[in-house]
Length: 293
Length: 159
Image (cartoon, rainbow over all chains, first blue to last red; front, side, top):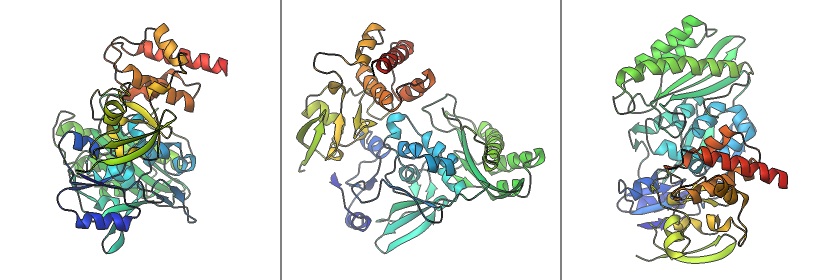
């Protein structure tokens, strides 16, 4: 295996374009090194992107949006007070990934590019309308997070392409987000179902809702029917029931050791209601604690 | 395959080593630098027995490549005691009998020290969540939690 630590994304891309065999980019390494050690994926070329300038920066731009470097860790996000204030759902979702030790290394970009349908941060990013900058041989383009995963362990990134920044929109006023997941224990587990909701309020009325489901289909889903169920409502009981029904209807899960098709389908509806209530309360300016201590 | 030359700092001492690109920091610490305090439990970041800090950040050394240590400051369990004087956490682990087989203990000490540096007055719940990535199959955890809480109290009183 060849190990490279390039100084720019263009150089990283060129290394990948010219590499033979299996290439992996190394950010936090909490998936890549596990796969390497377990002989699941044995890269011929490993490109460590952490020596590139700015990859550990969390920057709020003049318009209120955020740019996160691709090596920013979960721990760094959790410790960032104003990012946590703006996007508690995104920060809490990332914080649910793994242990304290894993949080010291794991990144949003790695969680996304690993391609797991159960990745906790991905539904939260999709609901938040996050995009990633993708750099390749022909320059850079901006891609919505929901367009990156194409199936378990697979992404839409072409050979030589890598994520070079994470772009989180400006939160704006009267808006909130939340992510909830079901696991059978309290910590250190993988989502059986995950649901993220982001919304804005016009007075008491929901607008611009985005709802995303994890671990209930081959990829994380952005479900327009869920948004339609609550947009224009005050999140009354009828709207919540319609949201739950739309979430369950969107599920296309598998049965595995973590949960059955029936369980996942039902729980997706339950969590959608709960997450929507938290997002709504946060949009009202209330401080609501998420799942995690 | 050519080896990678790495210069790093381990427990305050500048250190150099040559490693294979596939070698983890845990491999390097144990097999090249003879620092065998960090243990390999799972090798996949689940058990925390290999916990060290890099630039003050708690990580599993099994999930870090040796090559990534270039220019970093590594701290291991070997650096916790001051010569023959044990760290309060180490003393409290002995007092509370917070270990049996001892395999998880170095990782838990490193993790607990990292917690108390960030949060000198943690609640029991905060200690339990912080240490959730450190598995112990002997003690049932209660004695570990009590030892950490007791050490935190002593360290607050001493400071």
